[in-house]
Length: 103
Image (cartoon, rainbow, N blue to C red; front, side, top):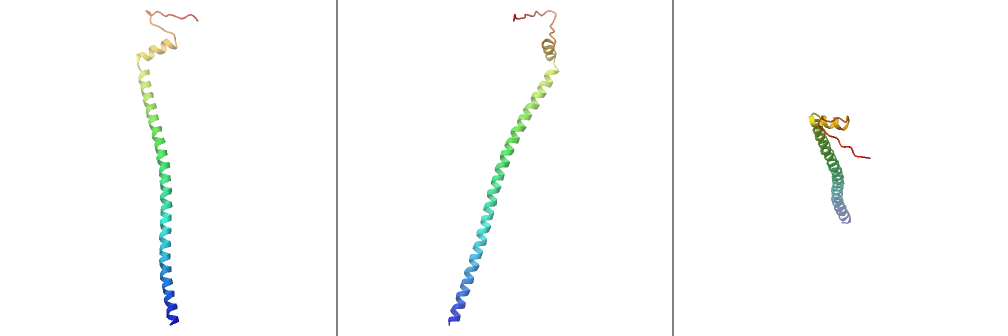
């Protein structure tokens, strides 16, 4: 009789041991997936910040390209030639009068 109760107790302990092992494995998988999710969210935040910075750089470069195109168009005009001739070379039209300020 003592052998039967002892073997029954061992079987119950083994049954509970299996349940605990399964529970431990499930908890370990949950912990690993949670940690992985946290790392992915952090990495995603850093990628979003980098993407935002790059988008700002793209916008700035597009603005700069537009300014260069506008300057290129301006340099091909007669107004640009006149401005350069007046400012850098000191040239004027024949009928223009130049007033110089006393220093």
